[in-house]
Image (cartoon, rainbow, N blue to C red):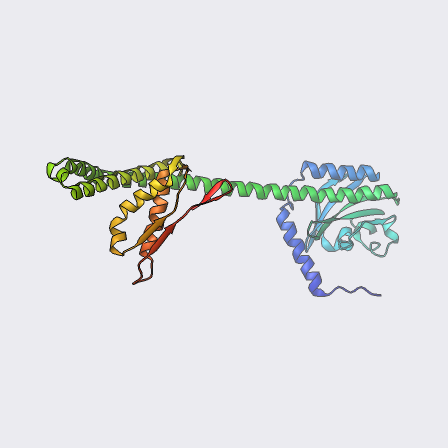
Length: 341
């Protein structure tokens, strides 16, 4: 039976090989110490004078580490490893001059060399792409025993491990550089936010301070103190202004420290009462009905809870269906060690 490989399959493998080699970024670079150590071990284990890690591109064979001779580049058509590149297992040839695959090869005929013994194992990526071979060779015919062949295959696998580690390390370094850049950009953004919040807080605090002072003085006037309704309205305005001042201070604090929460035992019912007091005019105009069940005291940032409840209740009123009086219900349910509000 003849095993025929279609042209699209060959082109797909070639493209995947080129992409893998480009990703490893090892072609043309000086051999790493780990790769040099592996190729030295391969030569010693197989008891041969020469060994090489050969990577095969579309046009060339490039040696990224060698033992017994200087690394070089040759044309792909002259490469012995390229002739058996797609073999997924070891290839052991006692005498290449007697093997039909190699006897006309220039590294065998004497044009480029006089190789006789040749053995190699595939360099296969985790995705199953063969990018080259780890080969050992000699100018004299010889054999390998089973243990030597197994070690040759194992060393080829370690070569790919080194390339993978190098790739993942580079990717990690790139990710770290990107994260560092993002962190620095976030730091700059936070600084700008802090400046902005400080300016806004300053611009708001000045008139708010005047409002608080005026309402406090107004509440002390005999005419206001003598009228219960006027006194209540002035007191409500002063408390609302005080809460607004607290919110402004929190905006500034959040810009400085990154929205750190300040948790204390907080009565959620009391927080809701403040919200309803500040929204009283809005609730009256719609008109809206707000009912609340028992609410817990829990460790929380009271000012943040006030802001959340203020937004939720005001939005419930604002986005209710036209012509329908809003009904808002607020309940609490314990869920394990938390509260569902």
